[in-house]
Amino acid sequence: MSQPEAFGRYRVIRRLGSGSFATVWLAQDDLLNYPVAIKVLAENWAHQMDIQHRFLEEARILRQTDSTWLVAVHDVDVLADGRPYMVMTYADQGSVADLIRRGPLPLDEALRLLTEIGQGITVLHNHGTIHRDIKPSNVLLQSSPVGQRVLVADLGFAKAIDEASGFTAAAGTPGYMSPEQSIPGGDLDVRSDVYSLGAVAYELITGKPPSRPPVRIPPGRIRPGLPRELDDLILSALSVDRESRPGDAKTFTDRVRAIRTAPDLTKADPWWRRYRMPWRRAAALVTAAVVGMGVLTGATGAPGVSLTTVRHTAQGIRMGVPSVWAEEFHTDLEARPAAAEAGAGPGLLVATDTEDWHSTEVPSYGVYATVVPGSRALDRVADPDPCPGTPDRREVRTDSWEGTVWDWPECNGNGSFTSAAVHQPGVPTTVYMEIRQPDYRPDLVNEIIDRTVLS
Ligand SMILES: Nc1ncnc2c1ncn2[C@@H]1O[C@H](COP(=O)(O)OP(=O)(O)OP(=O)(O)O)[C@@H](O)[C@H]1O
Image (tube, rainbow, N blue to C red):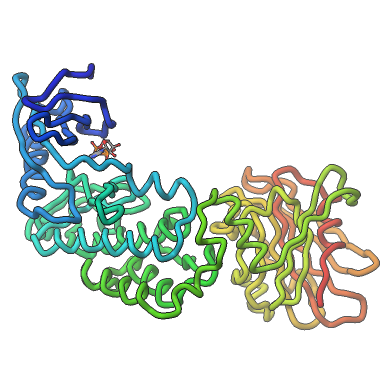
């Protein structure tokens, strides 16, 4: 759409962006000398009555609710060609999605934003409306004399609560929408929005949206040191069973507020979290802070590979991991069933993707290690079939370690998979390891085992 000169008395300045149904323009109200955002329904939708109805319904809800926490609609009108438009508050500071992209937010700021978003959704729930598409890009930010203000926007999917309990078409954004929203015909209530609030909370705090439901990894695993109540609240909001979620946006928001005002909150945020920096650097600092990390470069038995030493003090284990794999870590990952049955506790994982480590259908490269009491043979601790086919079996014997290794040089199209059970000569403690590599290198497996130290 080329830039129009004006919509009524509003002089167009520039395009702010386009979504699936509309284009939004920045314009100036010359009469009141004030900037506004104007959302115009796209031409190809303007003659579809249901879309036009939904567009006007969005404007009506925003006009009727008239809340500090929601984008306000000042006016609606129709262009000569039949396209309706609405005149809204201009959010001059982008969206929460832009903010998250810039790096981790200090915990207090993340919780402030979450409280304000929750207040906006509470206003909608009190009005009898379910938003159905809460996500960081639909939460806008506006500067105000008292600082930055949240404006919940984009009610294009919003629905009256009493209509939503009957047949409801699937709508929402994957990653943020509740499991029941993806079922066409499913009946919805305000707890679908509570799920999305949980997903936004997860992303505000960790920098990434939660995995597909069921979500099992608490945000505190990714950002250690969070108050326990916050982990519990976010995981409960993300429950597949909506009975286990907080009952509505107000209940959720009240709990966020209580966590935010608890006296020891600042202790949960180490000094370096109070500064903005790219997520990757912050993640490296988390690794350093929690497991203790040093980088070993130079001569290693595996040429061309620089190893990062990671140490997990509580489990008394130290490992060398190729630095390029040391992107994420998990200090407490449950072992696979066979190792767990043999007595293995949760172990240390350092990998490119820690979320789906146990699925060999998903690419992830790294090392997992856990300790099993006693001298255990590999076939007593390793799953026999993490990958299709029969593994290559070999024995390892170094100065420090002896044991057995199974290698699947090619596993489900996602590189190689190695299981190993090793112990120090004469010491009745077994280390069970899994190593996943993009290209199979047995010399690197040997190197990783050789450098592992138990204390
Ligand atoms: N009131 C506003 N002030 C400033 N920018 C806005 C405002 N409303 C929308 N925008 C921006 O305009 C763009 C288009 O918004 P729109 O709501 O049409 O779609 P979207 O949310 O990006 O996508 P979709 O509707 O497909 O989910 C977005 O970049 C949005 O941030």
